[in-house]
Image (cartoon, rainbow, N blue to C red):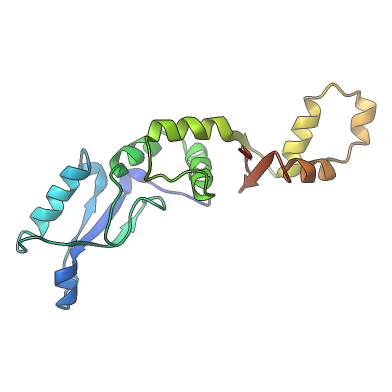
Length: 177
């Protein structure tokens, strides 16, 4: 599986730039599912680094967080909502959704997660063994006589389908919108 992310285990190692610049990597791993929202997460970060007056947080490492939701010095406003939405998806759907997002169709950190999922649902067709398997299914849905189907060039048809109307990655097929 290309994008296996266990969102319930999403966690961040939180240090500060001041400590880092003083030669310390002191911090702790904070599990995001322990917080109701970003503000509560930041409260925990401030409590962890209460020895600094105005800590500048440094997210030195993170696990099980999709691309585009966190960087070294920032975390998305919607990270908790996105992780909760991903938690509700089965693994195949989650993988397809993350592929769709990673291919530049939308940014996880922008907009409403429900709207994003709705747009994904409009574009996602399903999982197939390969592009030719998808083309075969398309031909099976056509009203062609069995005689014609025996001579059908599925490889060429798949090449045509995926050079315009569709795209695929890791077996997942999407409309090219």
